[in-house]
Length: 249
Image (cartoon, rainbow, N blue to C red; front, side):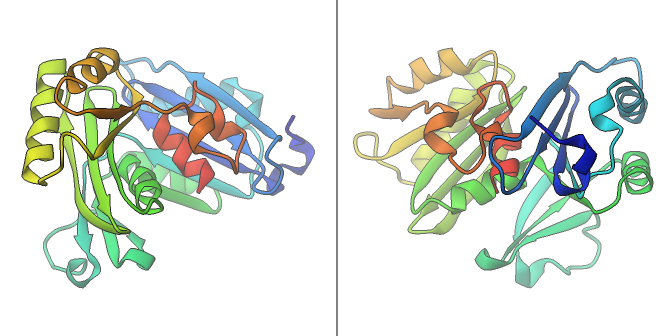
């Protein structure tokens, strides 16, 4: 239950993707106070128009929250060491992971950004990869395959240090498996000892998990409840994984 009279105590998180919008409200200190709402977009309308319609339609979005997080799930981005973040000519927006001396440089639609900055106070904007990468870096060692729509993020962390992070097209199971196994081999991971963790949602997830298991002995497909404990919202299976990691961070 959310006390909207005191909305300034809560955080509103908005996930923006061509596949649809998601809106989540949670209290940073009271885990059982949350709300979640998915929203189908009209592909014939610009994303800003879809967002405006949603804000006009749902009372949940008509409050002034203490913090608003805008998660751009489809935003192209690249991971760069902090030493190179100021290289001229790269352009785009930058968000940092200072404890790991890393930053993400990402692209965002200018119209969307202008609307969001004019509409919300205390706005925090990040690409989808950011919260997933932050989650992976909180593990001592993990090889993570994050499926979202027609893409997948592959992240490898060893002894708390990032070894690899990239995003690939996964419009078919064959493509996803090709990039996954190629990356596994390039990183020198063991087919017998290392664990592949597959998270997220995709039409090819079940088939990919089954086929990957033919080549990699240990393939994990954990439930959100096994991964997240700080936020009840993040434990909901219906919530996209990048949004789960954002609200749990």
